[in-house]
Image (cartoon, rainbow, N blue to C red; front, side):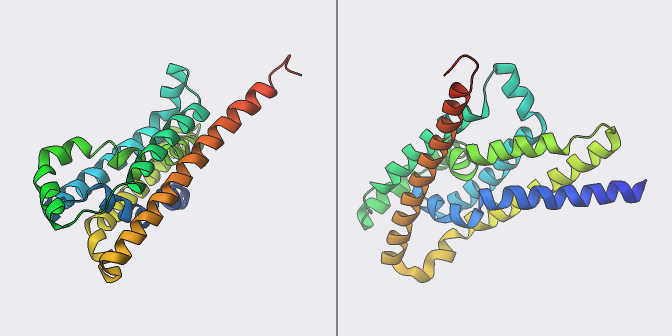
Length: 230
C-alpha cells in the first residue's frame, strides 16, 4: 500500500511539473519582471521575488485544488477566464512596449518612487497575476487538479501531495529566476538589455492576443454548435 501511494505521489509530481513548468517558464518571466520594476533597488526586487513566488504557489495550488468548484459556483467558463486574462496580459505588454528607457536622473526618480509599499501593492497585480501566473497556467492547473482526483481518498491525497510538491519546486525556480534576473541579463549590457526587454514585451503582447483569441474561439464554437443554430 505504501509503495502504491509513493508511486502515485511520484507520478503526479512529474505530471504536474511537466504540465505547468513550461507554461509558467520562470526564465522568460525574468526580463519582464525587470522591465516592470525599473528603478527598484536590489533589496526591493528580492522582496518582490519572494512575494511573487509565494503568491504564485498559493494561486496555482488554489486553482488546482478548488478552481473548478469556484468557477462552477459563479458560472464562469474557462474561455471567459482566458479572454479576461489575455486582455490584462496584452495591456501590460503594451505599456512595457511603449515605455521610454530612463536616463540616470529618471532612474533616481524611479528608485525614490518604487518604495517597499509600492512593491507590496504590485506584488500580486500585475507581477504575480497575470505576468508570472496567467490565465493559461491557471486553466492548466484547474485541468490538472481534476485529473489528480481519484475515487480512493488515500490515492487522491497522494496524488494531490505530489502536485503540491511540484508547485513548491516551481515556486523555488521562479524565485531564483526573478531574484537573479538582473545578474542573468548583465552580460547583454545596457543596449542589449533594452532590446531584450522590448522583444520580451512584444512576445508577451502576442501571447496576450493569442490567449484572447483562444478563449474567443472556444466561445464562438460553443455558440455555433449550440442546438438550434444553423
